[in-house]
Image 1 (cartoon, helix red, strand yellow):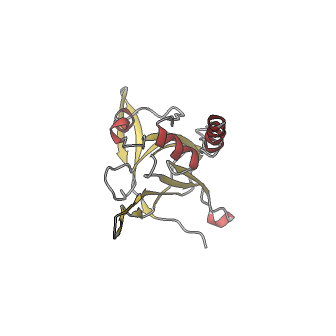
Image 2 (cartoon, helix red, strand yellow):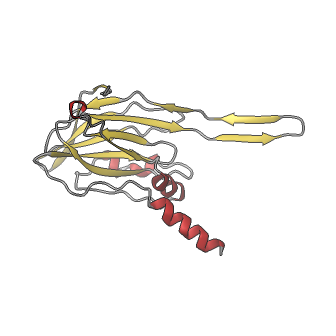
Image 3 (tube, one colour):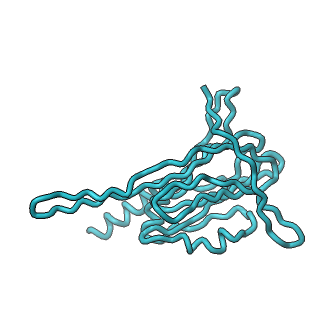
Length: 197
């Protein structure tokens, strides 16, 4: 009975994992790769159009219930839409922690509309009860500053924000370029977060 309840719970949690849009049109979309893991998610809001009243679509890699659960038990899978491999994808296992498998997912996003990105660190709290005292060990929580950029149609991007340690890493955005069969990264200038009133 316990096994069947656990199985249902697993299926329920994976239903909440955010899966990428697999319909990619290079004429009006870009592709973007985000990394995340249990306790260290990356959050993106894409397709922001304040004039049209569209505050964008949010995805959370590593922080959604399905991603976090899969990262916790090492069953989370990378999802690719065809962005060329980079050093970060080839060495992703180096970011793995205890009960925290690092993953990446690639998304097709609207071109020429701002994208906001931030990373987070979600610390754990441990409570120890002694004979006369209770000790609470808190690793803390934090959110990085949100950065923004405008993707161009037909281009590929990679966001690096994974970092070991108990702190938030400011996301860095790179364009993924293939020249002469070699993959290169070109840093993309970012701005402050776009906010719609």
